Image 1 (cartoon, chains in turn blue, yellow):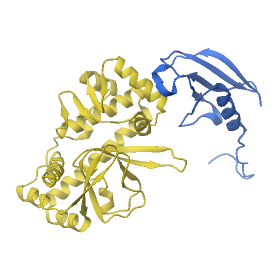
Image 2 (tube, rainbow over the protein chains, first blue to last red; image 1 turned 90 degrees about the horizontal axis):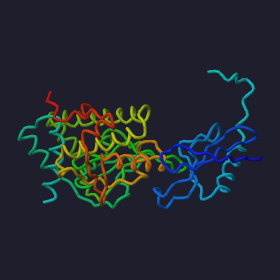
Image 3 (tube, one colour; image 1 turned 30 degrees about the horizontal axis):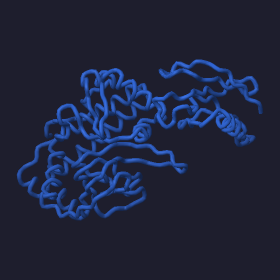
Image 4 (tube, rainbow over the protein chains, first blue to last red; image 1 turned 90 degrees about the vertical axis):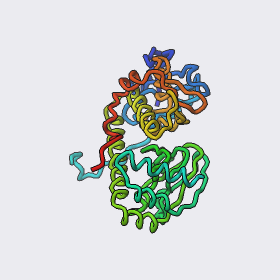
Length: 91
Length: 243
């Protein structure tokens, strides 16, 4: 799976450096570089927003972009459990 | 000395919600208890325990929490001196854990002694019941916050709540109180990431509402902080009249 990272400014009240992450044409995540106010985590990349399978209650931070890409790929490739044939998807 | 402080706090906290007679106070003062010390992060009560003693917080602060299998934690409430931090253990087993936020002294009171006190002093029993109802009201308020308030309002609200609760038991001096909470505790309490928590704290500081120094919360603009947190203290039922 190829990811395309597109630089973008994100209004988080910080310095704003971020990027949109696309997988096969789909926007899957927004990453933001953490400013000096985050002290030990300054310069790390934060999963500001994950879509679909990347939407999580505990968004991670990454020391660099390759690490972020690796994590995104791994989490996009986790297959969902197959649906039971009798399940119409309704409750 | 410690014993006087212990029971004093316990009775004072009960009296936040209803008057007690001299006989009630004397009976509470006679509760036999053993005091143990806990360091920050130590477990005071553990999920799954079926305790035979109540744990009465004498000094320091504590919090209730539940941890998922992969380590994600949710903090459900904070406790101040005078609170019994595992009162449900009197009737049920513990379905969550309680840990020390700061160094804490805890009085252990046998359930048999507590039951005897409650059986013979219905006013204490009612006061304790009220404290539990208030705890449920606090939990509802947290639920409203997590479901519907912005991160900014959620954090401001928590600081308002602790400032009001600590103020009610005489633990606010001037405009400051000891509340040495970390960003991780805050994010675990309010369902936020540590990154978002840090951003909001910077914003609250920049807006001149509060600051922190050496584990102390300093409130610079109390009306402003209450407005930011949409804080209406009615749910704490402080100074409620005895029924």
